[in-house]
Length: 192
Image (cartoon, rainbow, N blue to C red; front, side):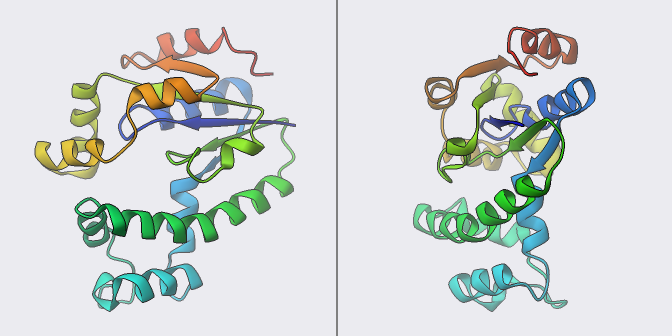
């Protein structure tokens, strides 16, 4: 079994790279954001921990996490973002490791924007980061999250820079928006 970490800042194209790894290399993907969403559903311990830290106004009338409200808090306050990250690492990292232990495929990919901060890079055979031009990332974030440019820019400003990912990763994929180009860059990496 080979474990590959995929990381990068918001809008860089991590999901696109993971789709290629899944399609062309039969990799099994563990998406940290999706795991966090599953674990923060109504009635979970993770959601209760978030409520304990951020207050009951963080859930809607149905008792579900109001993600937009939480995002607006953590992108305004570094300490609150760190607090959420600590909670996330407690619940999500353990769950990711549990899932990996049950997987049967030869290649497993951990898709995690906070791969290094959560120390998940330590269980990876190698790490690939995805980087893109800042303007392209801002455009992608605006479209994906239906937010204004200044909000997208604020989110990116609070994340690690492309340079951080390049310095800390084993391989770099430059995403210019062309899937064939990304697949071509992957050929230089010994995936299998």
